[in-house]
Image (tube, rainbow, N blue to C red; front, side):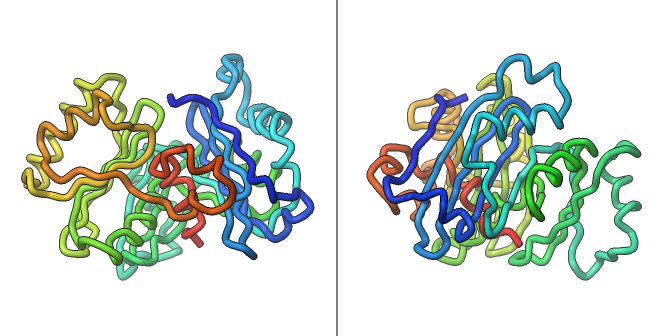
Length: 282
């Protein structure tokens, strides 16, 4: 994982938390969060950390308590709290086929255990619903820790953010977002949402394997626009594998990262594309 980050805008005041949105991403061994001042459209706080090693041995409730205890900002009351949770158990359902009465039936498509909590949310730009499963105690802990939080899978903010890029640029492309030993891939063809999945990649060779499978499965050629975000930098092994197969590769740009003081400008904007796109979810 990339190095820890804790940046604060010099004008940010905790007393203004009620005017702010708190955005959180929870991964298996790490977390990141941002506080956005909605009245001034400014980024106030940006944090990325790993959980302590002993967090693997404690419950989700205890992890959330640890998370809040070491981050004083999180103990405030915010206008809105939005949280994405990394999960491999999810499915997409077109809006025209979705029925709110069948949510428990949809869980069969994601091999959800009976005790899991189901997240039911929509990705409005592409008119699809996401049904995802997370640990029931994690959902309970999140709801006990924050007031009326919106909880979604990692897919929702990533895809919502892609839509913003699509409408302001090329209507087709392959989008890759890198996280903690994993990457998300989404493919948009002529403005239509064609594909999304998340893959475990302990090594660059495994990433190469999944990337080649995507090229074959989706009939993607080397002229396809590829847009990168998350924990990847120019010159990384994964980056070199990508440029081996594609000629048009670029990084996302998050305008919000350019607001506030110069501290945020020292961080590559693409690293927090998915986290900050969480604010697009409703």
